[in-house]
Length: 153
Length: 170
Image (cartoon, rainbow over the protein chains, first blue to last red):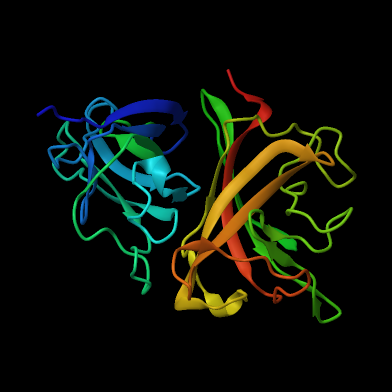
């Protein structure tokens, strides 16, 4: 069985350099292939259930980082790979989950979660209860961080 | 709809000059009567906009070339390099925003939608939408609210980050 791997495309790279730390900011599109899955509690994942990693998107290690999903956060469910009928309405809210920087390793996993009103359940916003195989889609997020040796005088 | 600029930050360096502004919308009333509204598919609207009710203009936040008196003629938004965000908390009590038909749960969710240099009377405009869970199920954008029905005193903060059109530095 082939693996369906999520890939990334850099849309914009900006350097915010000044008298403080050198900040890097990148706007990145996550390309979701048909066959990838959504894992509740984790987010959009490869078909192996492993979260995608930003190995080729971050320059070396990072000192501290922030990350955001880019607005609009409310997306049509089919735009991010879900099929009609999983959610009770067509909209889902995207929320960034975590950026693992604790080990300063070259493999930072990224999790983006999707919340909607499940079909037949109207008590509020939640994730699908079980892993969902996705169709093709994409979403955009932004990372802003300081390279580990990025201090400027 | 009144607007305030809470904070302006300049990111100057070797690349384009970036400007970050934190702004806030405040729905307002005129002689104790509300004037703003919410239009499904569009967002919160300014009830006293020049030329009639419309999306809030950023004219006093982002100067435009040859702008009206009071504007600083220092350039305009360089297209496609802006970033707009609403600011947490994005969940607001639905009691603040009347929704025809009723909702499930106590909260609604705000989402930044667009800032456009495609001008309306030469102004940049911004749209922020509101979503909720209706009693009939689903997760839907708030329904339209009749003009003048939106209570005064709803505060919606948002942030713009952009490059002035002539803002590149060597």
